[in-house]
Amino acid sequence: AALESAWPNVRHQTCIVHLIRNSIAFASFKDMKPLTESLKKIYQAPSAEAAEMALEEFAESTLDKRYSYIVPIWRRAWDQVIPPFKFLQ
Image (cartoon, rainbow, N blue to C red; front, side):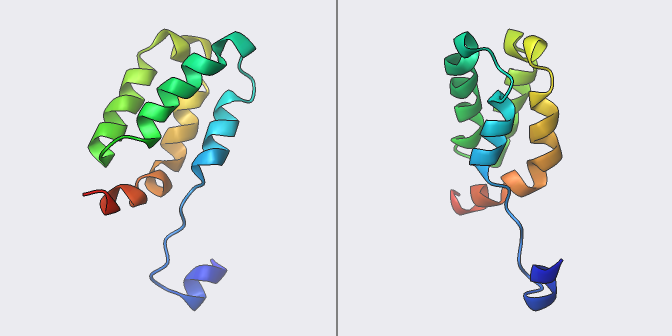
């Protein structure tokens, strides 16, 4: 709120590193590599649409069945995750 009062056009961006840390915080060590590879498909997607598709793909995966808390974390922050994608197009 303080930023918005000083700079009305400012947009807050959620840090991808924090989303990843929150996503893997309670994951089994053996699942770390597949989890981080799946999440990388989201945040390294070439567009917001591709990122959304990667998130949906993760939501339908066996990893989501084991770690069902991850997709809601990303969905809650989605409006702050996607702004950088506009610079890719």
